[in-house]
Image (tube, rainbow, N blue to C red; front, side):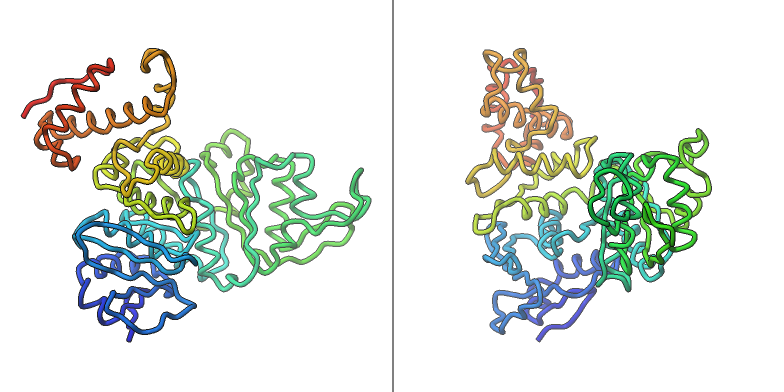
Length: 420
């Protein structure tokens, strides 16, 4: 029998056998009111699975591992220590539906909790944040939690559409309205009727079109190109920007009246480097996304997660996705992604430079060695140069660490001696 706790359905066996872990996961998920749809089970549970639910079977064992059934809705998480942050991150990733937000950082959780409350209304929302921080994911979260969830969610990038065509694509056009208009088109506003329209990179919209957008928002109607009569639309607007819109208003590049019309409820997403507790759950979720169905899932080692948490992430979640995909390639058939498989963008560029590689070639082995060196040297620095502490954190023996440091010196990589 399952009982609901914080949006998670827990069997009695799972509650009893995995209390520390499920309580931590429930606390995170409850903080932003996650909807039910995930069942946590224990290996002792023999009851039939509800096909409508995503299920995660928990198992204590001698090693950490994730297994996925063919349909992707059934996962098994084996773990050694329920208090591990890596295990919690893996469980949060396994429990999340595809495309759902994943967070563990307190500020991210507070943003999701606020978005949950905003979803209950129809007010416009303006989401600001650097590129790659998850603005579209947050927008879809608001839509999915709103009364419009069963209606269309349409996302358009204002910077990606030709300026000459943007008006017709937003508001629609009549047949023959312009050269090449061989048929009428309803436009994004009418396509999103009853649902949500996401206007991404709103700061890139031309000033001439901003006035027409303002009228559409004020009147709740659009006039397609070539038409003479307005058409009523019922659309919730969410706008996203990666630039400082108040500054754009001051400098005359964005209409003040449109800004205030959109800025009814502003939300701001921080860069990934400023919310480090989100990194591990996101890394596991991205690993689950990019390992093809039917292939074994590698575990992400604590030392690799520590390396990820120390990175500056100038590309935010998009950069993290690149690093995870790269790690999957470098790890190959390995059961675990370790620090030696983590190759940041800068590492790969350096690996292609003659001064950093033997003979000036960017071979895969050189990339792996440089990434491993970065991981070990970063850990040594974090441990104050202590080889014993660094080896313990990396999960290797001190002898292995000394061997690796010597091999780095032989390859011409500058390495400090460290201390015991």
